Length: 346
Image 1 (cartoon, rainbow, N blue to C red):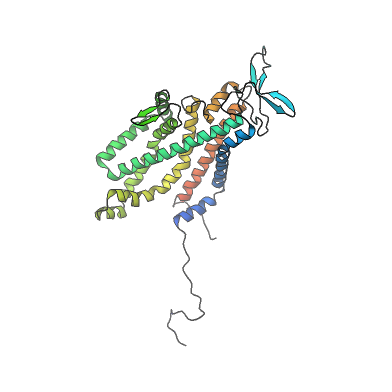
Image 2: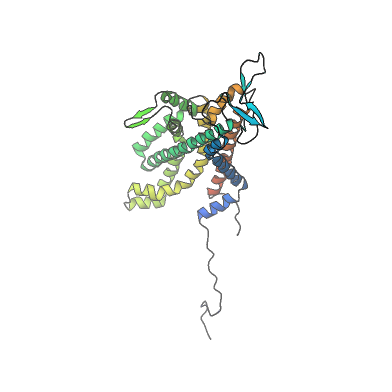
């Protein structure tokens, strides 16, 4: 039997081209092989899970983390122990909160100056801090991306106006601007037409923190859009008469998605620090709500007698910010096409 060269015959194995991985799959492999980033992600997810369990923990422990319990008594090794102990220093006047028992459900981290369970308040405070940081991150990314896209694509007077407005925000020190906005709104809230936000609402710190970081997202996005605006595929779409709105949504936005994804953990870390600072200064989360910043403020007067009241939320903030930054660095390396991580074969 004769056959032409290059024609497969019976029982001959034909080699098929090996399927190549897409860019997202390659990025996931890089991130998965970054042990430090994956460990940081696991730690952060554990922190989130613990904070989400705050209502369950408070119910199980039988405590109200928002109500004063100065006359509460608990059982420790069968012995009734008051939550607020008589002071043994100086003239013996006043009371000292119960120290850590290191027993879950039984004032694990002790009590604060109001006799409240510090562990329960820690979990509720973390829930508030994470929620504010996450919502402020979404706020910043939405408005920062919109400003960067519009300024970079349309240019001209639109770019000039938006860029000057962003420069004004950029000129203020972050914390000075956040403190100034908080002081103005904390007493009377925000009222814009039908939109009314009360002074004690968590939306106030979310909006304030979201606003002050908009230039930090909008400026790099604008730079990327200016570069993409001169690329061949965008110029071809413009010459074909494709509407600008469609070009922004279908051609430019997908090309800056990786930058936005990298921004998420890094902005979360910054927003968490800013929220804690504002709450520590009493211009962030307002009582009876709690955050890690307000708990540190509550424990400031107890730093020498019951340091765990202030140290526990401080360590929680430091750990959360550290793991978010480590994960953000790994995410940036994974999504960077210039990264030199060797993938090998699976």
